[in-house]
Length: 294
Image: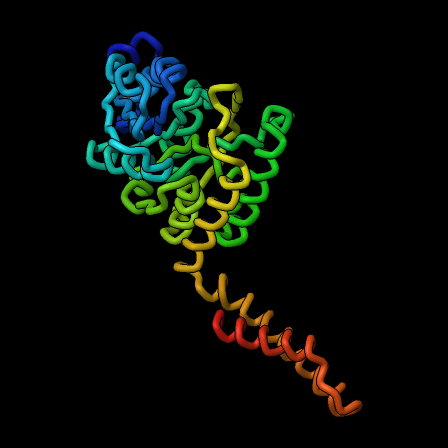
């Protein structure tokens, strides 16, 4: 796709790595053309995963020369990312860049995003929305709060030093493509991928990235649902990989709580001859929950 346009734009690929741009798309007919046109000079192939769109997203992407892989029904962001990864892996891509189809990312930043991979410094690169000065001013308040909260949870579970765990603007080198296979269908796939990267000892680097929010880029998901979906998915994946961390520590806390309240209840019973129901119930309940978790 890009050989002629590269010569016209000064694009050089000293490492001769094949670069795919993958666009997860759902009803983005108003923005998909702009994203494709801006991205095509920075890659060898653009793949669009049309996740069950009911508008002209697929037709527009095909008319611009993109390879379109279609889901007959809307399966979710994570399913679209998995399809893009599978397609890039099967197509011989050395690097896959994911760019949202709603226009919130700047495709002109693709070169900066993939540069650490080309230099052999990273297996995966994240375009962080929170690195630039006044970044919070460009992000809706509740979304910014959600991003930071989710990032802290992911950082704690994965020991990855990232500032933006939910950014969809990412680059994956061949090692990452070969080892990451997200199973979450929803937005939780973004954090699942970070946990998989940690499990496979992948090197992750962040680079600053601009973000543009508009009516087209506004999420159709309820913010509370989005947050609980991502956190729930993250805990589920983490519990499978690190059961002691996810269940062992809370279990130990419940058991200690049970012991403290049990001693308190027995002390009162020994001194006054009466059993305090509330303390006893807390002790028994803590013991049961703690035993189940541990």
